[in-house]
Amino acid sequence: MEITICIGSSCHLKGSRDVIKIFERLISFHRLEDKVTLKGSFCMGECSKNGVCICVDGERFNVTPSEAETFFNYEIVPRIK
Ligand code: FES
Image (cartoon, rainbow, N blue to C red):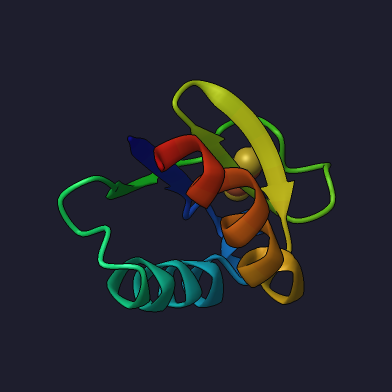
């Protein structure tokens, strides 16, 4: 699975670095290093939305740092296992 996180300036201000850190921590916690690839992307054209723009296997989401752990556990983990 490929997860692309926008690191454009607007998403950066909304905490994309924090979202990346949280995802990295959860990937190693769940031992998903071989199954999930994290990538950064420039602006994905959805700056006006609330939260950092994330693309999971082609599907777009907007996630704030405070939602990141819940999002990972409920939207990402079930798609992998
Ligand atoms: S900066 Fe992330 S969608 Fe524009």
